Length: 304
Ligand SMILES: [Zn+2]
Image 1 (cartoon, helix red, strand yellow):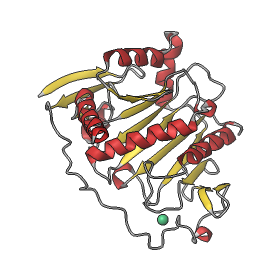
Image 2 (spheres, helix red, strand yellow):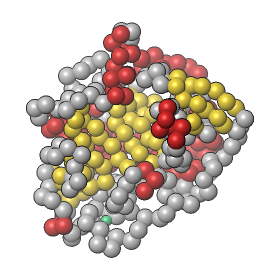
Image 3 (cartoon, helix red, strand yellow):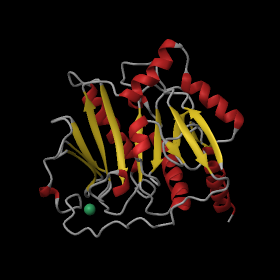
Image 4 (cartoon, rainbow, N blue to C red):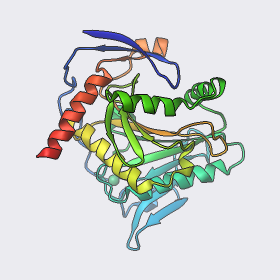
């Protein structure tokens, strides 16, 4: 049994890694429920009348690819979108052919809300599978505008401001030098296993050059490829039906003192009393071990 404490260099939060060396993921592949049949799915094409009127539609001439509608059960009224990611009921981030257009939609909605009075932060996230909080199996994302700064962002900002340094930039050069938690790199992005993960196999996709807000990201095609490859590698290990969350950790466009990144958090374990009591988490797979497992799979696939 390996046991150690890890402090997240961005937030200062401490988490416990309690792992057995060479432990395989403790879920059986594909033990999660397959997606339900699209009976009466309100997000499938042909049932547009079942959803509220759209605020944005991205099409390809013959039909829609992405639709943005107001959330029927908003956390904050008029500030909460549902983004229907694809007309296909069974698509996911590794199969959506128009992924750059979906990322473009996220950016458009962020710009829209950041131009709305009183909005301080726009949260963009995606839940896949019941274990990750998705109530409808059809692939969708959410955009939620907040009149305050969320706790995680404030904790990260404190490090950038008080210590006056590029916290993420430093983390990135350290990780690239060590190579213990690097899954792969592309021209403009690095893909790392989180140093102090909140879930086993938590992956960060980080732009190599400092970009404070996703609103300024221009490499949407390349980022799509990187997301596709990351999700497909994770699924190779954790199963096709892997439940997970994607979050976009991004500053508002007026705040340059940040370095945005994308998190992918497989939900192969659930939070219990310890996590609720302490707000710290216990993770059962060390990120270095997770990296070894994922790299072995990824490079084995490549050489086939
Ligand atoms: Zn559907």
